[in-house]
Length: 239
Image (cartoon, rainbow, N blue to C red; front, top):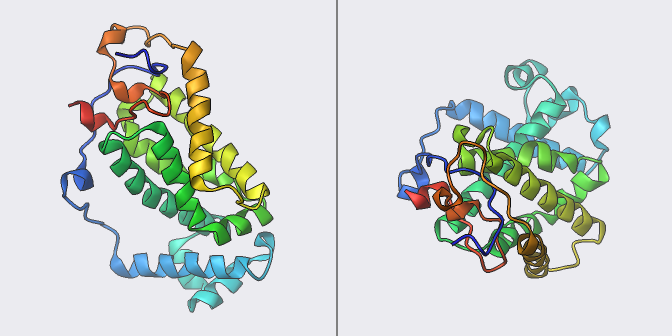
């Protein structure tokens, strides 16, 4: 039954669930490299609390992390690359939390609450991002990890890709508004707002399946933006 939400796209094959099936993915990154990169991202956050982002130099970053410029360039080619690494790492951390929620068949509101709770725990970093005009990195670097876990390569070129971008863009804009208001609202309040918006959109909008994708009856329930009570499911939940 797809009456509760707007259908976003065609059925796609689930990715391997790895961690969701109890198998912890093994990192292939050299431990020493991983440690050095983590130290550099941590150093960047420290520096952002002291100087504007555009004034942070490679020399400053290397010195704060206890490394040389030569060591820095073994891992990154710029300060921007360190910032992107930081945001992608946060995105991967959030994705693990969000996918757990989706695997449990929770609602869109629950997903929104997980997102805002995640950033509530990092309110200090959010303030630094806003102060340095870096909030755009949430859309550019934070969300792609969730997109990869949710859709995989099979999502490219489908209606689901548009649905993901619609969701990510909307949540990112809400995050910016929240920061501008000093993060005054609770994650629960924001989740309620997001759920009501989804209700409003789903009430009168039902997108047709992509041409060649089969009938609407072939579409998985995870493709529903849904109401705040509608289930948002991970692809693996269907098969």
